[in-house]
Image (cartoon, rainbow, N blue to C red):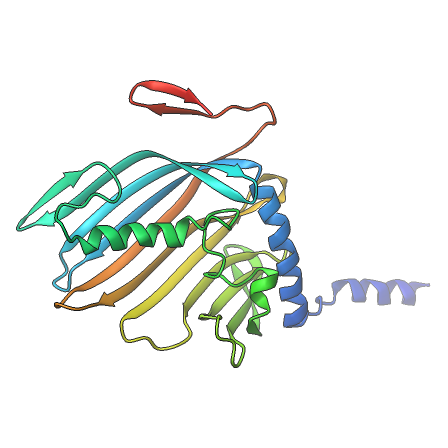
Length: 269
């Protein structure tokens, strides 16, 4: 009897076997779907910092946007609640008060910056607005990629698996390669870094996203940032960067109403 107890105790102390990468990513795909359903129950604040920098290091255009984000069926609705913008005019900076403002007949900075915000943070088919193809961890996106388990480590006090990914051969609509840290207990991503998987002379792009666990087991992307470079005709060259943070999460009640303040008035939605 004592021998059986010792054997059982030893088995209990033995380290858990690390699952293979297919098992890890399968569970991640399932949990990503569950997390997206839970995200539909929360409103939150999203802040964006969008910046275009000239080749000489000077800021050509900068916008700071703050949105109130509310869930809709299979998508989100964003209400702009605060905005600050500026552009370089000679040696001075001029302020403006709305997204997309163009200060001349052909303003590439205004058009490209607004497109960057829309494409990367306002995907209408994504439950959290972040482009679904940017971080290929959902079930359907995983089908396009090969994954490799690089090892196990500790990240911010939690055990995680480090996994790399790259497009499967001849997969034309898979654009990214990178690494992810997967929480070993809950099989949710906590950190993802991606780069374009192919060389492109006019565009170099790097993206980084972090995730955090909230109440009810809900995991949410809390920060997201990237930088890329564009070179065009007539010596046009910009380093473009985006930084996004999500904060102030509040769970919606079925009887809740959302109030927006506009020009001193309150509108109920």
